[in-house]
View 1 (tube, rainbow, N blue to C red):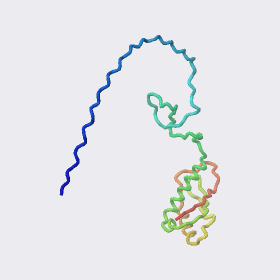
View 2 (view 1 turned 90 degrees about the horizontal axis):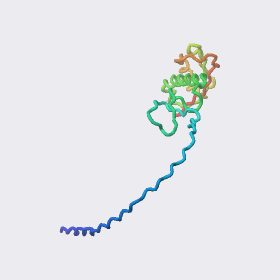
View 3 (view 1 turned 180 degrees about the horizontal axis):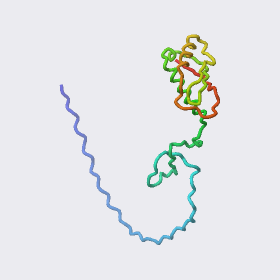
View 4 (view 1 turned 120 degrees about the vertical axis):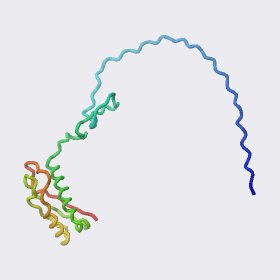
Length: 170
């Protein structure tokens, strides 16, 4: 059997519009002019705040200043060339080690020493402290023999050998 739908709700009650309030005329009183503030030069922010973007019209309300080249806020951006080069060389070594699938699938920790010629060629590379596993150590020695060159030359006077602890976790 079909049921009848409920009846529609009753229409909302009509609300009478309240009468408009009477408008009072306001008489303007002369205002006293504010005291002029003394001219104080704007304070410059302490150092540049480091954005790498072209300026546009208007202000960003934060006093941010563009710094070309993306220099960071902290430090002068100079850095230590020896530290930079050691990181570059370590990444090159890790690339060589990761080329071996067997070695990449093992967990180990070893210490490696590397001597680099002034033109960036690897003069000598040795396993200073092995992993404790003969199979892994022989794989490491085989891969270290393939470490021939770093794309950039080392900075003049760089201390050698470079020494890294290489760890691989499964």
